[in-house]
Length: 124
Image (cartoon, rainbow, N blue to C red; front, side, top):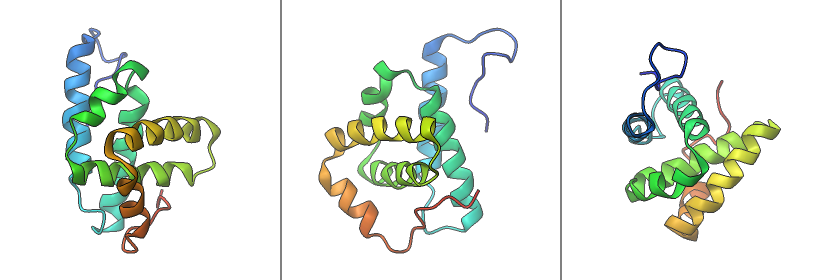
């Protein structure tokens, strides 16, 4: 699924965009990070797109809507983004990392880094 874009005809209102972002992000974060590399890569791309479309003021709201497992998976995908070395993406991921740590606590970091079955480097 694609997140709603601005260039796809009539511009949707922000509330509908946020609902779509939350729905699609939740689905991507429900994918087991021990899944096939292709599924993880697809979920990573979805997460990357979702965090880039979320306004700064809405980050905490989005994170509060996630369950603990989704927050742990989000942290894993943020580390994947940080590993790319892309300055813009890294800055975005660091912002989300800080906000996610405030929301989910330091245990989220420990769980994501100690899960040896999850590659922290994106496959695409």
